[in-house]
Amino acid sequence: MELEMHMVLPQLLRLAWIAGTLPILIASIPIPKLKFLHTILLGFARRGKIMHSSSQKFTLPQRFFLHFYIVASIWTTFLLVTTWCYAYTMVPPVRESSAYSTITSYLIGGSALGTGSTTMLQRHAVWQAVFLLLLMEAQVLRRLFETIYVFKYSPSACMHVLGYLTGMFFYLAAPLSLCADCALDVFYFLVNLVTKFIVIGKDHMPPVEVELWQVVNPLFRLGWRHWIGATVFFWGWIHQQRCHKILGSLRNSRQAEEYAIPHGDWFEIVSSPHYLSEMLANLSFAAVETHRWYHQKFEDYPSSRFAVIPYIL
Image 1 (tube, helix red, strand yellow):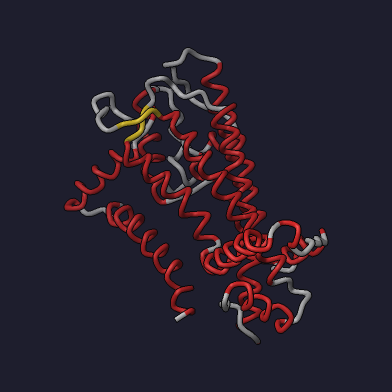
Image 2 (cartoon, one colour; image 1 turned 180 degrees about the vertical axis):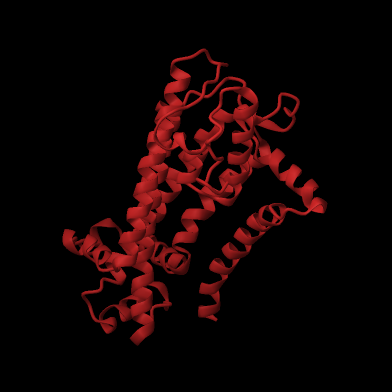
């Protein structure tokens, strides 16, 4: 029964992601009968300059992007801190499984962390969740900073309300998905910690001893694949930051409603390098539409540029 409970959250998240991405994948199939679905989804994905002036129903100001990153920063920070505390307290790799499985069972009434190979897999999963949440934290905090200080959204720039809700879902579900395998254990750990604090009081709580090296050491022991992935992540992270800086500078140097062709960095090969750096299925729609808008808006737009993936799309 307990194992079933631990599987519910990951399964629900998987179903949610499938429900969200399957229509996009189906709409991408080049079949005439599916064109209507493509048109509908494209209408939801449009925002800013690529949203037609006649499509102003059910829209919100594009500056509401700020909401995404405020929520994401708070939510990701909460998940990161609680998961990291749980990982450090309950599953430090320097202790034997018997040393902490008893404590875990006592505090949270049983745990998915068993013995033997299962224990090792769960240790790895918990610290991997911390590692991934750290990357997510770096992303959302930078996007929050950019939304406040870099981007100057046009007063008339809008996005569809369903696009807004989709973005809000993503920034709530994505961080939770990164720690879904241990989220229930972390929740029980937090609830019992708060309950213990309330019952016995602050003065009777055991002292907290933090060894800084043991806080970060398990992250370095995850394996080379994680660090290769982190390298690729920060490579895209840096390029997205550069591309956003270029876009922000265009708005600063012109009137509020004027547009210009961006140049520099990956803009020389694709129209939406900031989407390429943070590639998601739903962003491909916006990238292709942005590419089409540039060609319609500027007669001298570089014909050698692709929409989002160099030499492919």
